[in-house]
Length: 127
Length: 460
Image 1 (tube, chains in turn red, orange):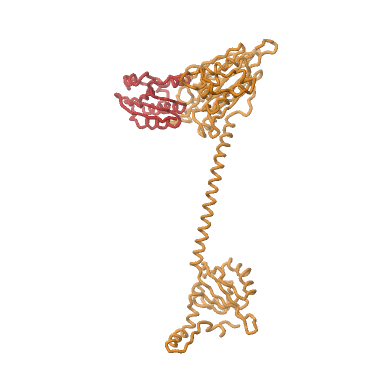
Image 2 (spheres, each protein chain N blue to C red; image 1 turned 30 degrees about the vertical axis):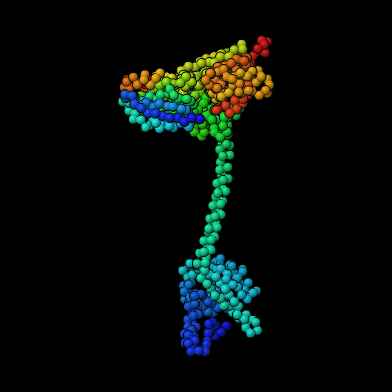
C-alpha cells in the first residue's frame, strides 16, 4: 500500500491537482480535502492530473465522482488529465467516460477556457 | 431502681491525695465531678434492665438534641436508635450483653431529634448487686462520625476499586462480544441482502454464489430472481460502492427499489432509471452512494423453447452467455451509467435468446479484479475433480496486472461451454477459492440455464 501525494499548482484560471501514488480507500479522503481547499467558482476550473497515479480502486473512482459533484455544485468546471489505461477501461464500463471531461494532458486541459469548457453533463445534476 | 439513684452519682474520677498541691488540684477535680459526668467528651447513660433510661449526660442529650425530661424515665435506649440500629440492638447487642455482661465498641446509629443520624460506638456493662444479680446497664457512647467517615471512605474506595475492576472486565467482555457481534451482524446482514433460496423459472436451472472477501465487513453485492405477472421473471445483480454498515443500508435500498420498480414497470431500462431517481433523492449531498447493476427481464418463449432475456446495465460488467454450441461471449451494454451519480442516467439495453443448452452468467467485478492466475487452469479439472488450483500460475489477461481480468474469464467460460448453471457456479466457486487472499472484494455470481431438450438427442 502506497501513500498519495497531491501537488497543487495553477495554470491560468485552472487549479491543478497532480496525484502521485495510490488513490484508494485510505487516501480517498485526501483528494476530497484537497478539492474542498480549492477556490471553486464559475470562474475556476479544476484539473486532476492522473499521469503519476499508480493505483486506483473503486474508492478512488468514488473520490473522483465526489470531486466532480463538489465542483459542479460550486458552478466550476472539472476535468481529468492523463487517465491511466486501466482506469479508462473502468470508466468506459461504468459510463463514466461520458460523465468526466477527459484530456490527454494537463496542458490540453488548461488550454481550454474554463468559461466555455462547460461539461456537457453538468446540467444533469446541477441541483 | 428510681432514676438518678445515688448509686449512679459520683461514679468516676475520685482522685483524692495527701499533699497540698495535690489537694488543690483534687479539689478542682472534686468540684467538677458532676461537671465531668455531664460534659465528658463522650455520652453516658444508665438504663434499667428493661431498657428504660434512668440517667443520661448533657453531652449525649446535646448530640441527640433532646431535653432531659423527654428522655429520662420515658424513653428506652432502643428508642434512641435508627431502625437498623434497633434491629441490631435487639438481635445481637442485647442478647450478647445478657450473656456476657459486657459489650465493647459496637457500631450503632443514633437518631437525633431533628431526624439526622449519628454514628456511634457503644460500650455497655451490666452493673451487678452484691449477690451478682444484675441491677442496671451502664453505657458509654463515643462519637464515631470521624471513624465512620474514615470507614465509609475505605468502603467507598474499595467499592470504587471493585467497580472499576468490574467495569474493566465488562469492557473487555463487551469488546470481545462486540467483535464477535460485528461478525455475526455482518453475516446476518449479508444473509438479509440475499434471497435465502432462489426459485427457478419454469424450464430453467439456477445457481448462485456469494464469496465474502472479509468476514469483518458487509460487502455491497446483491442479487435476486423473482416472478412477475404473465409468466415473466425479473432478475438483478449489482454492487454498491463501499463496504460496511452504510453499504449494507444502501444495498438494502437498492434491492427494495429494484423489486418495487420491477413490479411498477417491468421495462428494464425504466426499472434502473427509477432506482437512479430513488438514489438521487436519498443521497443528494456530496457523499455519493451509487451502485452498478444489471437488471434483466425474462420472457418465456411462446413455444416453450427457453426465454428471451432483456438486460439493462447501469455501469455494470457485461453479462456472459455460454452457448449450447460451445462458445462464450460477453453481452456488452456500452454506455450504461452508474446508478446514483447523475440525475438523468443513460441505461444501455441488450436482448438475447436463451435457448436450450444456453447458460447466462451475471457476476460482480470481484471476480475479474481478483489477483491470481486461475485463468490457465483447466476448467474441466475444476468441474470434475477436487484438484487444488495453482493460483500462482502466470497470467495472460493483462500484461502489467496480475488481476484475473475479462480475457481470462472469457477463456475460462469458453472452456466450460456448454454447461449448466450449477456446473458453472461450482467451477467459478472453486476458481474464487483458488484466489485466496487475492480476492479483494466480495463477489456475487448468479447463473441461469435452459437445459438441453432430451428429445433433441444432440450431444453437447
